[in-house]
Image (cartoon, rainbow, N blue to C red):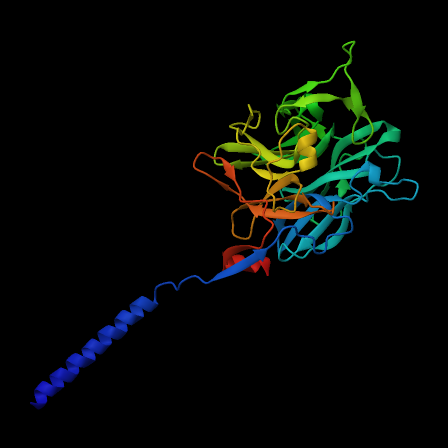
Length: 395
């Protein structure tokens, strides 16, 4: 009987060992990943200077999120040379959480009336290529003959400078909204050059600020009918800066009034050229190509993001079909960046009834056919779940 009891105890002990071992095996499995909520709500304006920021480009570098864009005064009509109220140049902000921003000052500034880059610094970007930082900008100097906008850039070894203007003596191109795309040791410039040329591109020499190929048009605005007088002469009206432009009788498409704000990314074997138009407010579409040199095909479902303005839509002959609850009447001029969740996001500016542009960000995604989608522009509280490692990027 005693022997039997010992055997029973031994059997019980063995079962206990097996149970402990089994528990140990389970506990050795990776624990469930803890997730953290990242909350944001558009528009984002904390820390952004007086007058707001247009054309916002957000990107990550090192331990910080950085942002640049068109600082106030945005337009020539807002500048006053007599009082010294001119655009101060390329501004740079940084943030730990994408929400609260602090100014790091102007990394490129005008140096005087004797240079072509004197007024209205517009739609800047910062691009990192082969370990160097390039601050892209667009500016003008009417007294020297640089009427309208012209493109240029500066270079630095550190994101916050100091920067040296590569195109100091003359601009890279005539036009606006300069952006770069770098691949296989070659850099291509994309920029907007008006209705006839649209958004075009050329290969450039980064070191010297010169074109290595003839500029080619990638995409053009949608079709329009122009207005003529009884003698068949084209009528003209003042543009935004007072210069005469052809008077349009009818706009046919959402991007017929003009296109701008190019930004290029590659996904798998397809290039995406994002752009904006102000025909019906301010909205964003894109074109795709299998080669940087085209042909570029506009997405038939454009625009995929943005906001319509009742006033602009009706003025251009369109029926307003916007979100009745949205505070925005314009959302556009985007850049693409990798968000804290490791996925692609969009940054741009949004304008509400205050008239002050602010930062707008939202995730984007691609369907199986490669089409771009977004649930934005959002204007309510958004929650993105992050892993513990991802959450460190927005703390």
